[in-house]
Each structure stands twice: as structure tokens, then as C-alpha cells.
Image (cartoon, rainbow, N blue to C red; front, side, top):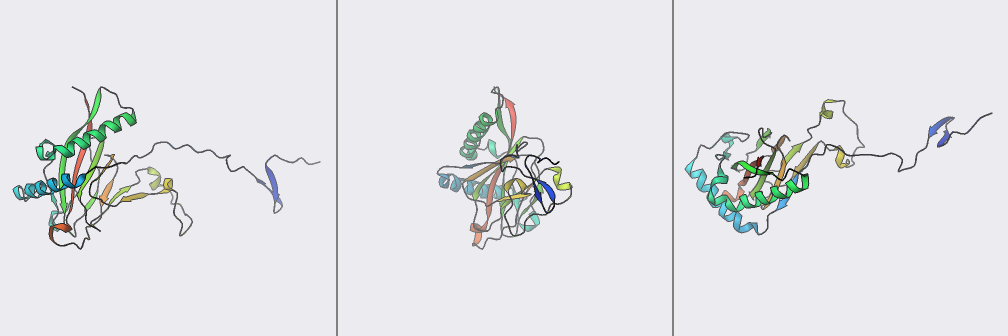
Length: 231
């Protein structure tokens, strides 16, 4: 005498489990957050920033070597631009976005996210930034001051150790679910700000703009945020 097993059916002479579509549950933990902000009426702010950034480059033609390639024409400023009154307008937007993040993430109200370092990078055509992280802080950000077409997107790389495991085969010619992505790219747009974890590896693709003169330059302001007790 045989008995039927619940939720199992015969198939090709054997038994196969049958589950309803909602039987399998999934929970998403340990997310990697990337915040974005479109700064309102950014054109005027950007015009002032462009003028000041080029003036700063004239004052310090050597600049700094970090993830950029000076030999390809890339210029990196010093890291205290947030103390310059010319950048006060941008600092205000960074502070406002940081305050919103603190509320969203449930940070202690006695602390706030404050800019520790801020710098600018000018990438002319051919320039890029190697993959890197920002040690010594919690969040990092980039604000696009000038971003001509094809001037180089930013790419974030999946930080999870699963990338050290066996590789997975996916359905060919089909877009993967977002939770299975191993990288994500953002196209630079003037007036947009991105804020991301400082430990998240990221790089910038080469500037392939065909614009003329300085209009071809990709100009950004980046910053690092740390948590400080309110005064």
C-alpha cells in the first residue's frame, strides 16, 4: 500500500517536490547604500565653482597625485577646499544631505556627519581614476561640476567576499537581478551628488569627450565625511 506525499508529484518515474510560488522567503541584509541628490538650480553654483577650480589650478599647477594620473593631464587639488568661502554653497548642500542621511540611518543625535576633507579633480580627455577607497572616514561623496558627454562614468565594485568563491553561470543575454550585480556605473551629470560608503571600491572611466578646449574637462568636487560630536 502506498501513500501520497503532500506537495510531491510523480515525474518521469520519480517524485519531485512542488512548492507554491510564495513558499520561498528571502530577506535582504547588509545592503550597500549609495545616496544621490540633484542640487537645485546648480547652474549658477557650478559656474562659480568652475572659475574658482581653474584659478586654484593656476595657483598650484603641480597639484596632488592620488588615484588620478598627472602624466595624462589630470589635476588634483589640495584637500581643504571646504574651508574656502567660494565652496560654502556646496558645503551647505553636503551638510544638508548629511543631516538627512543621519536621520535615515538612525545615527545618534549628539553626533553629526562633518566634512573632513574636500578636493577637486580636473580630468581632461584621456584621463581617468584607478580603483580606490577612502580610508579614515565613514562616507565619501562626489559632486559633478562639469560633465560633458562621454567624460567618464564612476564604477562601484561589489565588495562582498562572494566574488572570491566559485563563479556563477547566469542566463545568457538576459539582465541579471540587481541583487546579483557585481558592479554598478553612474553616468556623470552636472549638478548631481553621490554619497557612498568610504570602503566601497570605485574607479572612473577615461574621459572620451569630443568637446573643444576646457569644455571637454570633467570637473568634480569630492569629499569625505566623518562622525563628530555636536558642539
